Length: 467
Image (cartoon, rainbow, N blue to C red; front, top):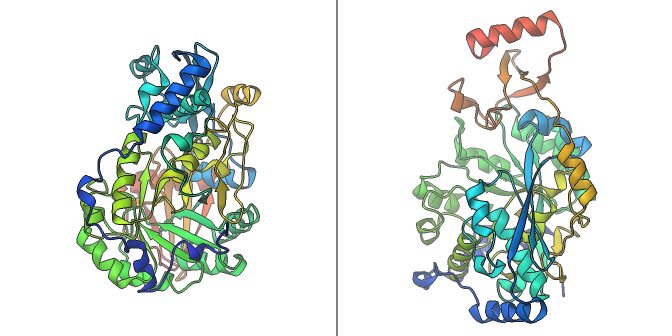
């Protein structure tokens, strides 16, 4: 078994090499939307579970809201960018004593929880009700049958699954630290959302200077909310060896624009926010790879059939902790073309609620062969994170300096989670990813200057001062 030594072996570049992504064609797409589930495999697993444990019934579901405790070196920028966050952990008990784990960013209402109580985990094959609780159901099915979860999805396609780290756009010095730390932990890809409050080329120069050979960056444009000419910008960015792929560089409904972009851009184009749910876009060849964000299990299974028929790589971006990381690894292990690096954000957490917390080897995570997900509850850490108070992140000022001396001041509000990515949605001022500027975070330092500027921004909106 050979592991590719560089990320480039997963995402070939060049106008001819990249077409390997789509070599299989889309001739057999007509039946691809049906769930390609191995019913014999599921039935055999259920029969084995009955022999080992008897009929299995969900008896109780514990619901725990916990604080997301970020890595110390990353906490400052994450708390400023998106604000402190919580997530919900589900601990599901069966009448026979099995315990299944799931997690999500929102707490399911009681009427959803009640659907699972009294049912069998095997009633939730291809679950389309809740990704978090569906994860727990698959964990229980695997444990009950004594098999790893990936075997419930079909034949194992890959033993090692590619994954990527994640951060946010910030000062070039902090981007350098992210590259150094993640590459030292075994990552070969890093994803972040671009922000027009930072110059992307300055960031790339800084990251390129410290990146190990083969380390790549996945750039998320969040559906192009700036005044950049995207073809020109991507050409500039693509000149750096660290540039890996471009996600959502155009408005989501511009399918023809994406098809044209693929013809003109050397690096892979990735679609996340697909307006038609990654259906017609796939047949139109709008992207080189696809992302499914927090897709429920049944939806992910159906889409995996479509991508397999078209021969197109895809990945699951299900963010959470190591429970989510484990589930995504199992799913991508069994799905035919799920060979694109997945995102979980588990690496951003300082601690977690399971004992098993793994970093990749050369960008790959090995799928667990243990029954179920292969992770076990750390009850003490669950209780600690449940009681942990989130830090406060009050509003703060973005102080942006242009190279011609102009100063721009904005108020950043973490209740608006996309302000740092798409400030134009607040109808403030058009901006560019390539503008000659740099930004510092001006927290409330108690000074009269800060209070006066804050009050002025509240009155006037964006404040621009000539150099």
